[in-house]
Image (cartoon, rainbow, N blue to C red; front, side, top):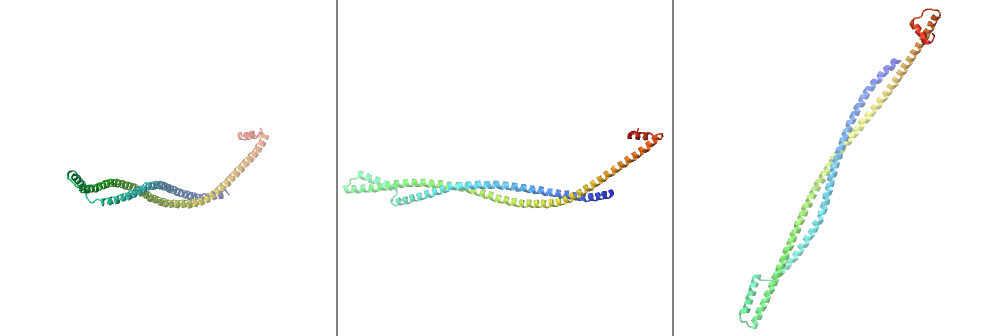
Length: 289
């Protein structure tokens, strides 16, 4: 029977070895898929983190764009107002320009000539009144010229404000455009990173699926291995039990043999026969001497 058990034990161990090797190989492969999956997930995390930074930068730039639109619109309104006011002033200027038919220098020269004539030439009352009337008419022209100068100065001021507003609008627009372009660049790059993250995540999911499949196979092989090893332990337990039984039987037989020998030696002693040293020791051990 012991031979049959030993033969069965060899057979079971022969079955267990390839199962253990196959299980370990599958577990190693599963671990490689886990490592690949973890690396890919880490790459996904890094890409998403970078995409989030770009999103925050884009949103910050968009906020700046919105903030710049307010002063730009205000500057545009101010520009339109100044243009409208300048247009009214130009209309008034053209109207006054139509009221004068001579150059200011000619008018002043004529007034000076008429004043000289009044002072140096004997005139009749009628002629004097006529000259005084002419002087007043010419002086009205000078008043208009004075008004024209003031209006032109005001117009120059308005043109200056208009150019200032245009320069401000241009500056704000350039800043706004710069922020908008950078925002668009961030947005485009962010979308690219998200697409990369999605692609890498797909690979990570595939790696995880492969890991689960390999791990499932490894677990099945392990179950088969455990089943075989359970049988191995059972056979080993039977062998130990048989070994123990054999030893007990050997001990029992040895004790019986000694008891029988002790009886023989005791009878020999009673008969007065000479005992050997070993026989004497046996009787001493049994307490018969």
